[in-house]
Image (tube, rainbow, N blue to C red; front, side):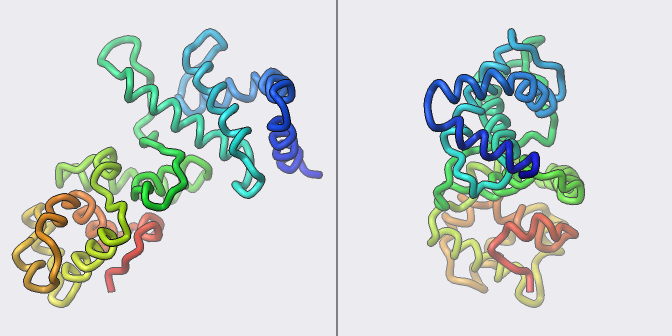
Length: 239
């Protein structure tokens, strides 16, 4: 059995009892410290609150891991990142006690319900468990481009469509944007959605466009730009 297989099997065994979990966490203490330090980009000790959070995150990962999520430690890294960010958002303040989170650490969620997933969640989940440098480069470039529109990656959590009906309506808006003659040039020039022209092309709710404006602009920028990796997370096409 290879090393990854062994780690996965040990994680599965650790879920069998409280004693097995405690033993697993104790044996993997250095691994958890190193992984958490890498995620937060600084040294972590057992005395730090971040270690306690990571420990609970790994316990959560053990309980939820079923062998279908790929490498256990890749999955655990995603859960650790999510829980550290939850803690950061809850307690963040300007000062010396602020957690040193790297820019690429986006907000994460562990809910698996499709209706709770956002574009940012999908991107975050991918980058949390892979070393896809091309995708990370795309993300950094996109983050900079979206700043010109007054959009931050954190905005994508709240403004992404959740319900299937809203997703389909957003698809119609994007279809209107890319229907010849496309409206992207106008969007790039004005930094706003040409709502009147969109409504002339597709029968959608103006209220929906207003509610998901940042998501729609972000999706349009992704589809029109050089973001093949990120575009793969959108259920739409520009052509």
